[in-house]
Amino acid sequence: MKKELIREELEKVAERFAFRVIYDNFEGKGGRCRLRGENLLIINKSLPVNEKIKLLSAELKKLPVDDIFIPPKIREIIQES
Image (cartoon, rainbow, N blue to C red):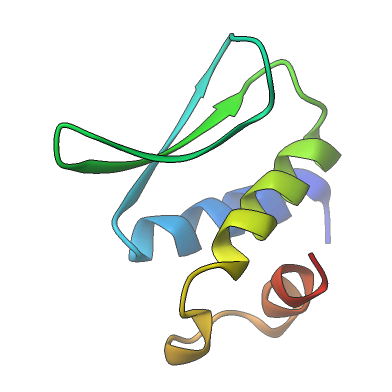
């Protein structure tokens, strides 16, 4: 599976948990936060795709992903993070 497709699938999983994924320039890598009642997952857009995938999967691993359907390859990536 291509890395960009993996990133997109991870974003879809985040959206199912009501997280809006935002890419922006800032120092650091990013992470989850809550701002004005909205759940955000902010990611430094200058990171390579591999790092974006690692960050997304690590943050998703903290959520109850066992309760929803996730394509097997994407679930494996989340569990390995």
